[in-house]
Length: 238
Ligand SMILES: NC(=O)c1ccc[n+]([C@@H]2O[C@H](COP(=O)([O-])OP(=O)(O)OC[C@H]3O[C@@H](n4cnc5c(N)ncnc54)[C@H](OP(=O)(O)O)[C@@H]3O)[C@@H](O)[C@H]2O)c1
Image 1 (cartoon, rainbow, N blue to C red):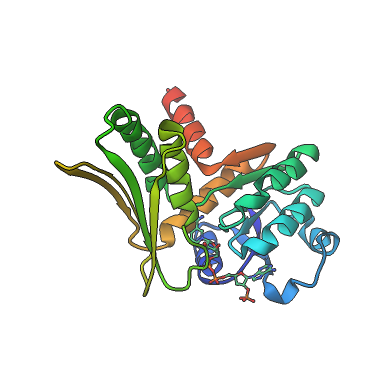
Image 2: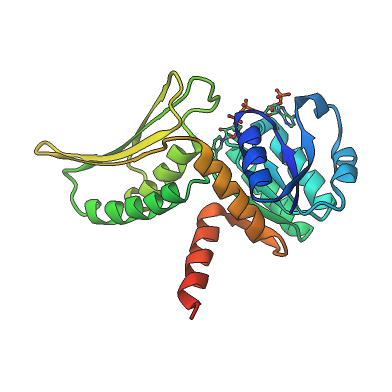
């Protein structure tokens, strides 16, 4: 694939490294230096490329999507902290028949962890003595808190627990690549489910999986749906 990168920080550079190792070409890199350009100007540079991968800043996401839709090019968004704009971004992509994959966490393991948490919530919701809670920890450079992954975990719990208040605690310190814990606490005991990222390479690998998958497709998908589709395709293989 010929890939455009929005953002060339810690994640953008990892995606670049991995993409090159997989034989892809990084044809364009957009950073804060290009922030003065509008969607038309960025779209003009995107034409002829296969996919864009965005690990930039929340404030740039809507415009990056607009540029990709205009250039008729799929985009994978790894950037977090833009959930308030999700409806607007979805409308934009759907109205113009574009293609988008987004995910607060591109680790395959986390997406399987979501399924485990969903099942745990289904079990625990029947026992009022257990209170659900979430803890997350990341490196001190991470800007948004709670993390997008923690918000997704809260949504999974809220689907079972409705309006019940679910505590979410965030830690920002040092170099932690990303830890998420979901607990169910009672007077008698505690059950703790945890996902611990060892490095950020898994996120870059997942973003490239999503980019390969979205090329040639239309619509808006969350990364979890991509994993689900891939699992189905594998099960149908002879
Ligand atoms: N979904 C996942 O699996 C996952 C995993 C890890 C991180 N993330 C998220 O990915 C995002 C980036 O993380 P990071 O650690 O790579 O951050 P980072 O190191 O701070 O890099 C951010 C990059 O965005 C660029 N940028 C700033 N304004 C821009 C604009 N208007 N247009 C285009 N690029 C712009 C910056 O440019 P300069 O270099 O010029 O400053 C920089 O290259 C964060 O939202 C983070 O939460 C998601």
